[in-house]
Length: 419
Image (cartoon, rainbow, N blue to C red; front, side, top):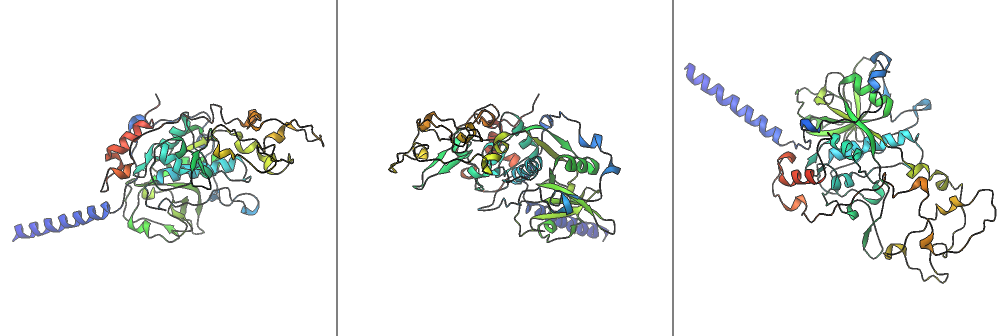
């Protein structure tokens, strides 16, 4: 009798374990663990938590509510990685969104926002729609590469080859698309890890949002609002999000404020709150940060954007005949775009009638020295590949770190340690 009871108990336990594994397998894993040699950092300045004590940190801090009367938002919009089709690019969204926020913070919220392109990171960075690692994005953006903004590489939720057109492009009215030569790119000058409540809070408050890995449960999928508290104890890394702040309720409950990449219809308009200080979902285990490298792309354009150096520009200035028989710049391989906004910087504001010499458009400078997109800072070696995309190789789902195509792409994109 005792034998039958033990056998029955064993069967029940086996069924429960099997059901648990089945439920776990239904939740995708898009976080690719770091290898020991990939846990690199480039740290130049003192880490914020070395300078700021836990007791000096406020009870609440939110980059969406800063400035006078907490009316200034210094974050960029929530995104959706799953449209126009499903793509496991959370790793690219969490890092580019956090860095876009940090660029906005450095620029003190000046218009226009710079929104880095997660699609360019998926095409060229250390991962694909099958998964990746946010920390490796910061490492990759430090190593002589960079990310374009989304105005020339919109999100498509597909993994493409890293050729020039899939870094930055424009399309014409006839349907033909072409790569943009020497597009502006954004990099990081230092990057590293933080973990735990004190380190995370100090880094966020001092320099901006951070990227964190985390577990995902069925209850988290169903989250609609409030402070999420997991009761399963799951801390297996499957996903990546961007933590933008923290708070504390009147009753003393502490929480993180984080931005997901599942659209504004999920959670609190794309954001969520989760209990802080007890490593809920493993979100305090491993977070990464990057410091954007100073760029003149926007700063040097402020006066032009706001009209300080406006002047009249004619067809002839732009290299077209006065009768309208223009040869469009984007249709000519030999033509160099003229600098409608840059040429004005050669005219002194005090000169009401500047003397202009009519010259062919190809001889006019595109950018000034301070805004030179051909420097090492903006130039990225272009890599062409004839490999087929990942979607053409596999019929069924698999973990990213088990996918041979993904491993090959990692090798091609230089996902390796900095010694």
